[in-house]
Amino acid sequence: MKSLLLTLALVLTLAATSLAGVKGYEMNYMAGDTLLRGYLAVNEDLEGRRPGVLVVHEWWGLNAYARERARMLAELGYTALAVDMYGEGKTADHPREAGQFAMEVRQNLPLAQERFTAAMAMLQQHPSVNPDQLAAIGYCFGGSVVLEMARTGLDINGVAAFHASLATENPAQPGLVRAKVRVYNGADDPMVTADEIAAFKAEMQSAGADFRFINYPGATHSFTNPGADELGKKFDLPLAYHAEADASSWQDLQEFFAEIFR
Image (cartoon, rainbow, N blue to C red; front, side, top):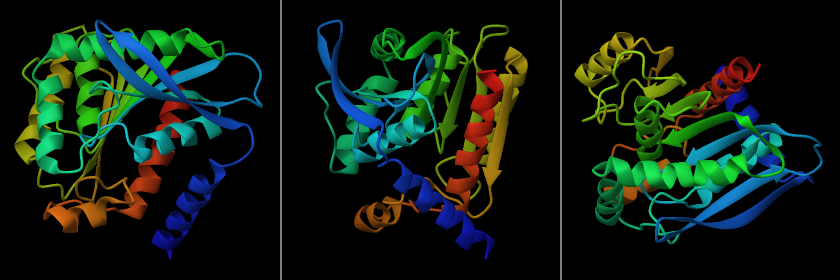
């Protein structure tokens, strides 16, 4: 019954994103010589400036899922920018291509920083956004990106990573992590090992970071994405949607934002 109620709550949340007031706009911006194609969601029924949230896509690229999460954030009263980390709005239809796109960014931290901060600057300049109140969330590949940005000392209120890789070649240094950190992980995700979790927690503790790590029993990789089951079957990957973990992590995210944007 609890799982059914949580599923119902999530469906209602998804439906709410279509309410009047929430508008979505395709946004072009530059990082160096690369054209990036983002998606901005804003509730135009609200007045005044509000916190801005960057949404970083899964390894598939900036697709409908990342856009929908941006719209859900707009319905909550934030202005959200779903960012393009690949350039030209590229998306992948196969894990082989997605992996190639993701590694090009993950193995080049300066490139990732350039593209992320370009999106951040554009969001800060939007008339609906308080430039001093910013957060970033990311899914899978995107979760890894926001964690890397936190490790670099990015001046942002908070980051939240959903079913992300925790491994890094650039561990956080003591005192450098300014953002508060949330990690939402599927406890049954074979892509994130117990050793990686232990190493991540030790890294954050050593850095003096304000962080919280939440494990969801029964949840595996991509547990927030309703399309994960189909993708998992199609490509024989350990991907599966988990409605209870999705609803619970989304609720915790809202509480996290209430904390960092006080």
